[in-house]
Image (cartoon, rainbow, N blue to C red; front, side, top):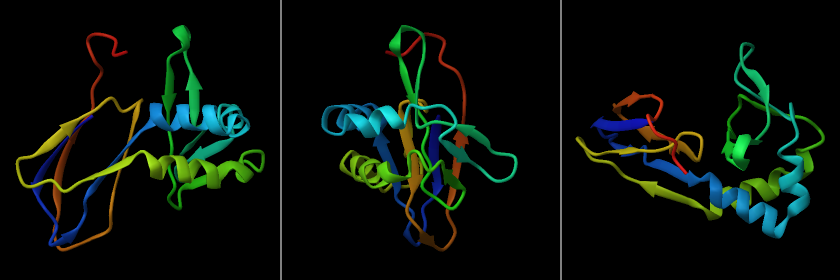
Length: 139
């Protein structure tokens, strides 16, 4: 995902980036039971009525792990993982960085490894986003 700032907000609106690999390692090192539960299929539903059932961590061929996580009002959780949400939130917070982008600045990230969000803002804010697939696999 490529995100570029066209116009910054009057106040707030900082981009929040969280390293999903670090969150995964954090949970599997310190709270393995939480990590294992969050890899179970269909333990999260992200989106409105047309959203989809998934899990936070998905293990792919070659043991590559992708992460998908929402904490907003469009995230619903299976009771199996509900007890582990405080640990997940804490791990995500530990590995989050904020970026206050000025017009013309942006970032490029692997959307299967990095989580992205933004802080609340006031005023007009304009950002452009482009999604794509890498030509070469990214380790």
